[in-house]
Image (cartoon, rainbow, N blue to C red):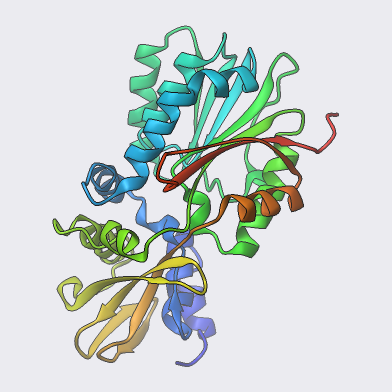
Length: 324
């Protein structure tokens, strides 16, 4: 596929980041786009449905770990914490944490899906009227760019549940953790991390029988049609997810079932049968492997909690970056 022309780049110069990144995706081989673009309002609702599916173990397993160990987690975090949730979602786990903390100073929810975030934070304000709550519509994957106020009266604590760290490549995960360690200096990070396990369990989790994950995957194309004027025939793209044991990751793709052409930015892109768009990775870790990564990125692992079957883990990491 030829490189993106100057005219095509000019045509998308005023479009959202999504349009520019999709143009790059379609212009290059292999076709790859960041999973953050799943999360418009529809995608966020579909992901909430995924979290309740019988095959999708991460959410219920992480919740069970939280409920069992919240008192210990809250003691390690300490009083008057300012909690910053990266990729806030439905805020269910945040509510559990806020209930357990001693006199939390405030809560900042960061997510790219503005409509979903605004609704979740509005509900949170009704239930926690005394808590200062801020909704920040932003790309949380760049903590160093977040427009956050700093208070001298609170300890800043990051909250990153759901194993979203697995959506980052090892290099991206290291970059995120390094930036988070600097943002949270003097505080720490409470983070959920999915663990290496039987590939059959992983396959079932990302290929549910109800087809919700497939709809979540295809919604990326529906969003492109609606927001960018593309003409993806979504019914001709098949959801395909598999576990790569050597890379210890799930890969998720949209595979073209037919020959088809897609237009974007004044360009036409031809897909052959079997050609795919790589939409997501979900890396799995061992506990020791994640500790090694966190230590290299400016954190000190303090405590780790796992379920009885070692499917999932939650870690409390303290930033080793000096306080100003």
